[in-house]
Length: 269
Length: 288
View 1 (tube, each protein chain N blue to C red):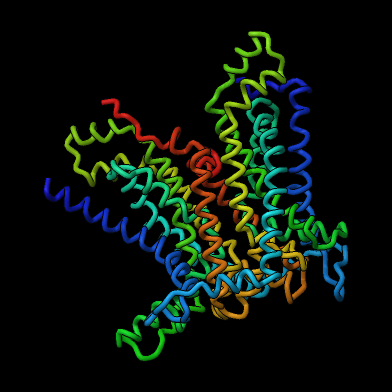
View 2 (view 1 turned 45 degrees about the vertical axis):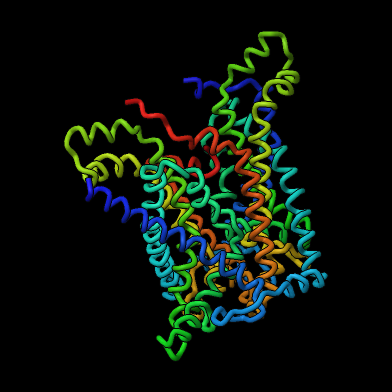
């Protein structure tokens, strides 16, 4: 019994160290964003100076606006396409369906550099200049699979019986969708949209290849980093960190991971 | 059985928008990049004259396969370390914690969604010459000169990519562990197996699909990355991703870059196919 407890403590210590490894770097960014000095030792005082500087950086604010706009547009398109795609893949049978699913997933699981380069090669061949449109194309490529697979797993859990019942009771397909199906998948769609927005908000690997002079925030920050890490970089990083965390918290209320999938299973014994 | 049946045309027509999206943003770009890999550069123009020169260049100049091999070895090491960190974490949250499990689960996956760039910035800050580790050690009087092995080399790449990969390992492993019926553990214990024996004979084999999925994800993420080597790798830390990137940047040899991209794609797809029988790769991420 005592040896068992000791082993449990060993595992928990190890787990704690991994959590420390995961969160210490994020804490460092927050600390530096409020620090008047650039080193960690002898850090003293507290300043909001770098945050004020952010507000004076017109280009940075513009890039922030671009990121929000691209995110909203890409998520809007992804919600429509991804939800329609999820129903299609869940309900239709056709030869090559497995290939279809894999192809949809590719922009999300392939290394970003491959998607970025492929899209760059093709937009250049067509003659589309690098612009907000090319950035949007990049973001639509990976937000669609995010939405589609989230909604698909909800549809799979829901099963086809509710729709059949609605149809048997005389609802037409449109009514069935509006009154039965949509309410059941609504939280999955909201969760998927938040997840897709979070991914879009941070994306740089694909965007990097498709960006001209019209930059999203990560691409703009990446440019700033070429001249070393200024306190302003820490301040904007801290802002991004807090916004991402807020989005994740919001998302976790909708995706139903907590409510449906990861609830501790009652032991059957 | 119903999978063999083909849906009526009306149902199939609903797939048109998704098919158009797929053709425009997946099939045509990847296909055209493949075609480009057989083109050649003529001055600053890409000439559509078919050639195998790009692939020949890759296999004849030992530098290129060398970089690929080195990148694969680093990625392998990163995937192994990420498993060593992520698996015990998932095991702990799934089997050893009862109160606050949901919180620990969230804590384990939150880093997945926290900005990639912010995490790179954090590690540059920690490992730099005037960074957190060096200045702390100097202030403590342990070192006089900053430790230079921390940043701008493969060590820094490995640390940062491992950091990025841990949640990617955690999710599929945790999902697999949660699926293990708890009464199997009781049965194993009733039959006299100790904790270690139960782990090696019951838990580990049953969680293997999750472990393999996590491993593949970590490996692919590490192999395809170009931003982390650029930011933390310095001159000796060139990875395959940088090599591809540089063909589209200053080297301006898009056909060769396209050929390198296809080599990376072929490796990725091969690994995904080889390991797909261990379990679905999509499940761990976007499903569930």
